[in-house]
Length: 496
Image (cartoon, rainbow, N blue to C red; front, side, top):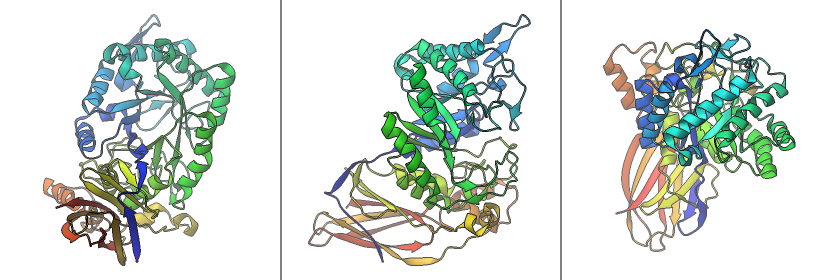
């Protein structure tokens, strides 16, 4: 039997909440809509994040820059103000992705995605500098230097990827973009934070550091992206992707990010991560995502300063607007605001106290605060899809009944002898906090009635149980939990 042991007097230290530092969203214009705004508010109440990152701040729908007949640029920040005011009200700060290129400034008319994000170099580099400086000066005037000092300014998105930068083969082209933006940010305030290279995969970090060091260019942090899937880029939602071995991501991040942190002393922010880089991959909807995410978060600890899940909402329009309620979207919420198992993984982590206890179990957190002890535990079985040559759409696009496993035992030492405790558990697994399996049983397709939506919202709630147990005369509290394959649990222990 698996036994998770901890002594409440043996403290490991302060819990590293790097997993809650940042979360992603699709683009600025989507975040401003009513439903994503309501989802953001709910998320901040139940599993708050410190920062949010998204594309499209300079997109035409934000109306930030226009050019008149004489060729002069004009800046407008009305929509920017609405967006950042909304974030302030939700108590979340932006990782400001500086990009991509407004079409009136672009050297080429090349775009990516349904919403046409410009991916070209600027015609005139001085105009790019002027745009960045104007934005940074405006937000400084609106929110004050002390606030903006806590923001991050990230230059571009995946400049090494052919879909996101026309000059992706030329690292020096990115350096030119980066330098202009970095100096523009620092021109407003030398204490503001600017970084990059926001690459697809953990690459160009050493090169950017060497470039900035040799040329006296500001660099305050690194950013990069990583996903746990193998296959081709999926711009139209049809690629056959397979889950890489579950240790794939944490192996890469420990081998590539941790050495950069240690060598340079600069923070490393993973500003996009997920099980798959496709917004049409049913793994994102599956209950498997909850233990998978917890596994990655636990095993990547120490290698990163932020681990930004991509994304919090399925209202995400890179391929096209979603056409079905469960379509494999990145989000923690569906379009209909139905929480997915992935959402509950973060909600469970949010309940952990700030003091982590020593625990030898690799698939558990044990923490405490003034109210009691909190445990988040999970088990995961690697389906070996990539090795078996099975794509995610086939494996996760169907019912996946879970096998019953032997009970999991919890042994807490150092408790008050003879004290009665309330034990409250929430469980996510097959048909527990698992609206997607219920949706598949309904036959899939569109949700035609609000009653159907409400039904799935009920199915999305974790299985909940409350019972009592007494610590023995030696101060040991012992209890067991029923366990199924690929399950995640949150346990809260409080004295009666």
